[in-house]
Length: 100
Length: 121
Image (cartoon, rainbow over all chains, first blue to last red; front, top):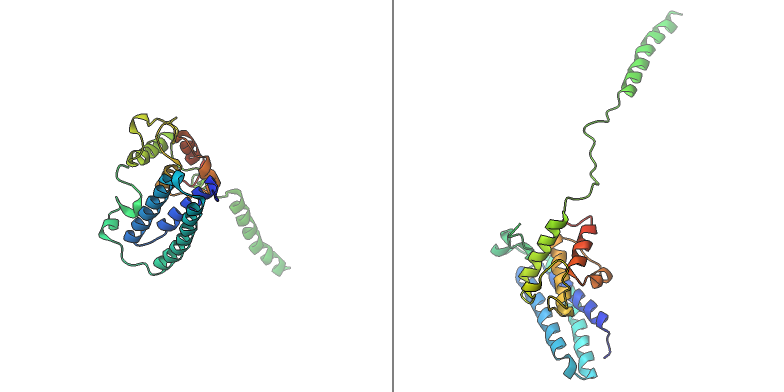
């Protein structure tokens, strides 16, 4: 294995942060889901993966993190109207305020 | 001579006025400590963290207690733990640095961490 456990967790946390940085609701949710599903899938196949496959998966995850960080920045610069869903504070920006 | 007396007369009241002003400084009831700690009680932190964990569908709900560990009791893996910590970050509007986030492995540690963060709300 070319990467340590903490390295992968760090990459995962950075990726989720990058996904959370999108201003547009649909993009934000999509990239969050995509990152989560991908890491969980890779982790699930973990024992059956060769060292080369593992390092390839890690490389592409790193490349995607760069893309997400760039695109999130561009997305914030050109922020558009919020969706109807977000206008309701109960659902705003993923934070739950329903039972408070 | 007259000029001196006149100047003394005008100078005197100004002097006494300054004295009076000094003797009654305006420090009193309107004093506020804006730097005082927020009013997040431990109970409300625990309640909100429980709420976050209840929304997380992989969490084993029966074992949800204040002393539960994320991996052993709640049945989460290391990636799920990262997600839970991120969700807690979002709930309390704080950013937890990586090395601090790695140390949070139980519900109690999460509550402790948030209660020590002055900027959590």
